[in-house]
Image 1: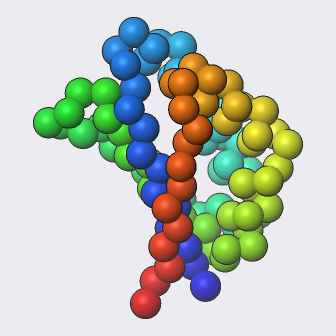
Image 2 (image 1 turned 60 degrees about the vertical axis):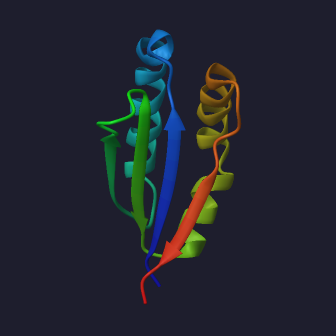
Image 3 (image 1 turned 180 degrees about the vertical axis):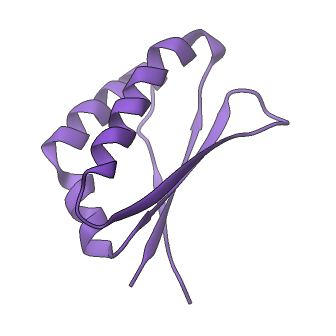
Length: 95
């Protein structure tokens, strides 16, 4: 069953430049993972600094393996530290 992962972040303008390479690294690593289908990143127009990432995975197991992987965790910890909060994920499946 295909799943969509929703990630919302609030990024202060002062941290955008530092965060950008970390997010790019995370995206590049994800693209090489088994089960990764696609990903999109959106910037909210009416709330500067708010972004939304939607990634699609072939299965919940594929997503879980990526979520728990050491290479993802290392980069994600840097992102969370920079933003001062843990990233939260919303997981959806297709009906």
